[in-house]
Length: 432
Image (cartoon, rainbow, N blue to C red; front, side):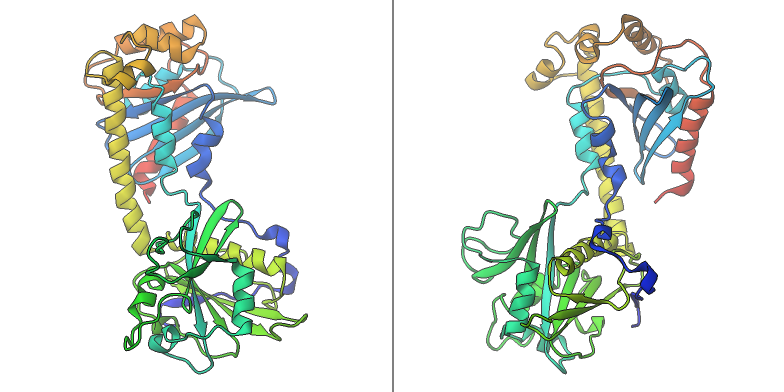
């Protein structure tokens, strides 16, 4: 189709099994929670960088008699996550040295800082999804015909039962996907499921309100047209052209054709199409792309729908929206960490909650003792770094810290520091 790609089926040798139905997600978004949160590490923020605000997390690790430095560096355009080997370095640079060498930043603490950072990192982690489900009869080629269908045939009901459970919308307590659960304005029932700890609400065209005299059926289009991915169900093969549904949001379709419905030999043929700027997503279609009715088909279909939506977010339209959101959230995070740092250092006003978080005394040394619980020489090094901070070096202050870090050293930063600097250079040159 013009402006859309159609997924090719794999060769028989690459036919996936149910164990290959992997949900594709942004592992970097979850890296802070997995590797840093609740463990000894340090967080820093930087002002005055040539590429805008930066938030950095550093953590010392030991594994199989080797030492590593795990780093997360966040800019307004992307986040870089890496683990750098410290093998062959005779004198390890201190964490403050690495931070200062990288972008001119030194130390501050706030118990709230880590929670703010994990909230920022996971702002686009999605555990709720809404998908359109469209019933297409043989020969229907227009949006008005698709949204005008009211009948739910036994074959279509059987397909819906594979997707999820039929639920009453009135007073429904789960994820509602924009449907009305109080006044019945979006129909009385829908299809809902929980799949791999993710809630999914389906906007089924035949269950949304039908309005007599409304050719466009705006009540139905209002929901399905604002979904990003939709499944199209057919009982008889008939051409489906994505452009027949006018929508700025719908970016991918999964077409399902049933054969031998409501029998022990029911099978479903699957086709996939998406806008040309949507990257490919798994699981790949087998060859032939035909599934027997059962749990494996359900696993494939739901995984495909979720991965389709996550891939659509990388298209030009949604990537630009996400880029603006990310930049604004990073700047807000930077400003909040700066406010907390000023309060911790006694340079600003702290609320009662901040005072409790920081020990209630407002003293920098007390804050270090309460948050770190590490060797005294480590603490002295970081306090010294704070006291002797050169004015005008980026204007940055560390954002938060939970526990200790690398063995401290007064040596010049060596290979590790320059590797960290390369991460900053990568942010400058690659962007997103």
